[in-house]
Length: 243
Ligand SMILES: [Zn+2]
Image (cartoon, rainbow, N blue to C red):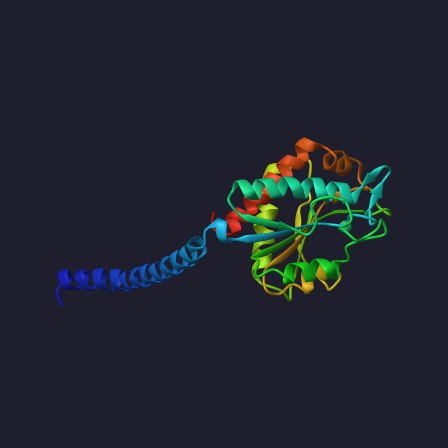
């Protein structure tokens, strides 16, 4: 065997395995790109105009939710939800709300409240929907230093709810990080009826902030903050559906 041959063989052995490795990774990359493009196309095949978002402003009517002095959770959830509705509509989504104001429905008196099970029934009475989004504000009286947005999904529910929480977490954090430093995505136990009873579509509950925290409270009642929060949520929903 000549030196030249040895060198050639060396060269061959040096490059052959890595060539195979490169081919393997190229094939793998093609497969991943193909699959992700397919998934991407699947999501984009359905235009936003055919997507129905059920928006659920927490509490309302005779149920004020959490309170901080004169500030009532039910007013904040409604104000933020109406802004989210407008943002979603401007992106082309269809939006259905469990309530659009604070006036009891016809035939109901001032004692009317909308129990979580009624909200679930409302959603399930629709022909179909693609997302259930519930808006709340939190309260933690024993520790007023606790603050930030919490995003809840039910681990036993539609698996994509976790992905939406992750997107919302990033978008809300990017938009409002200075004022809301602790945006968290977490699984929920069966504490939230609207999360564990809705199985036909992802269901996510947003606790916008803590009424018991001074900084959060100032944000929650600030119309500019509410607008930015709503825009971040709508951006997250659009991203989730492939926008
Ligand atoms: Zn609430």
